[in-house]
Structure formats: structure tokens, C-alpha cells
Amino acid sequence: MVIIKTPKQIEGIRLSSCLAAQTLAHTASYIRPGVSTATLNDIAHQFITSHDAIPAPLGYGGFPKSICVSINNVVCHGIPNPKTKLKVGDIVNLDITTILGGFYGDVSASYPVGVISTQAQKLIDVTRESLNRAIDAIKPGVKLNRAVGETIEKYVTSFGFTPVQELGGHGVGLKFHEDPFVFHYKNPQGDIRLKPGMIFTVEPMVNASDSWKVYVDSKDGWTVTTADGALSAQFEHTILVTPEGCEVLTQL
Ligand code: MF3
Ligand code: CO
Ligand code: CO
Image: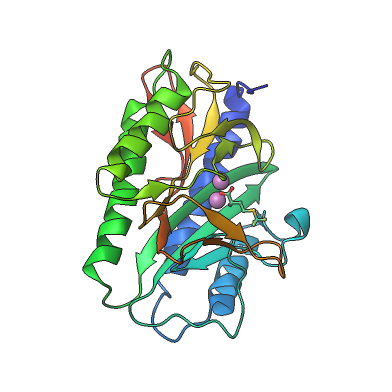
């Protein structure tokens, strides 16, 4: 069941989403060659807890850290580690989810580390633009998969890139992951018509490859990588459907 949030709930989710966006900007300002992913985790953890909030990933399904940090061919759910340091030419995604006053906000973005390849920069730009195009299509009365999945798949494949299929966006706000599942490719299964008060994420993971295939690391049970080793980028926003269209709650 897709929850229609009340005005009080929307206000709480708006505040948490704003904190998530501020945490992302603060943490991203420390991205540079040589910084470890554990340091980025600790910076985000400190920022979130000093604002009376909780990092949602910590302990979620056994996840051991406070944010996800995913480098290059890691699609998502990268576990911060003091031995993993950013290097020039990497692309890195920070995924941050806060719980403030019991409400969840979820945001992520991909960043270059120093100078990166033209192809890597293109992947980042196309992935960000695919999210923006989906956002432009979100309004009441429209089918979710038409606005989001079709828009993203059509745009990224025109550059020879491919949206990951196994993972998707999700309803969010009262819990970390709620209905609906948000496909980033055309899949009309269980499609819903958008209504004001719905809140969900759109978070395309896009591979610089013609393959959407991914693996989950069998040792840590979390780290998702592209099956063919290709680069993958991701951007995520928490989005409220409004009577006029939508509001991006994780926009600063
Ligand atoms: N933030 C991720 C998402 O966008 C979920 C991370 S689950 C975790 O849905 F356990 F890895 F934190
Ligand atoms: Co997220
Ligand atoms: Co999410």
C-alpha cells in the first residue's frame, strides 16, 4: 500500500530530508584524493548526530556503518573502510539517510575525485540529468513507471549506458523503505497513478555499459558491483507529489 502522507508527516519528512541534503553537502566537501571512506562516514555520522538525528543505515539489516560510499564499479551499498582511500580519477557516490523526529530523508550523489576521464564525467552528467528529467515528469494523475522508469531508461540508453534493474527507488518517510518499488526502466508491473501526498525516492544507478547485471559481494553481503566491472554512477532525491507537480525535499 502506498501511503498518502498527512501535512504533519510531510513537515517532518521535509525537515529530515533537508538535514540529509545538508549532511551530503557537508560530507562531500571533504572529498579529495587520500581521504578514506571511513573518514567520510565519520564526518557524516558526527554531522547527523550533532543535529539530533540518527543515520538510518547504521544497523539496518545489519549494515555496519552510517552511510554508503560506493566507488567506480561499486553500484551501491559500499561499506566505509579505513583502508579504502579515494584516488585521483575515481568517481564516488555518497548515500545518506537520516531519521529526524522519527521521519526519514534519503539522498545521494556521485562526485569526481580530482581529474576524471571524459567517459566518467559523461556518466555522472547523464545520470544526474536522467533523475532531473524524471522529476520534471512527476505530477498527479501520471503513472509512476511512465514518468520515472521510461524517462530514465530512454535517456540513459541513448548514450549507450544502462540503468540497473535489481535495485530501485522506494516509498520513504515513515520507514526507510516503503511501497512503491520505483523501477528505473520500463516495467509497467504494479504501476500506480501518482497522487498528492505520495513521497518516494528516485535513485537511478546507471552503468557505463550495455549490461545492467550486478553482483552482491558474497563475503560482506552488501557491496553491489557491476558484473562486467564497468563504472556506475547514482543520484537520488526524496520527492513529494504536490497538487501542481512535485517538490524535491532533498534539494538545498
Ligand atoms: N540509502 C539506500 C537507498 O537509497 C539504502 C541503503 S541500505 C543500507 O535506499 F543498509 F545499506 F544502508
Ligand atoms: Co539512499
Ligand atoms: Co533510497
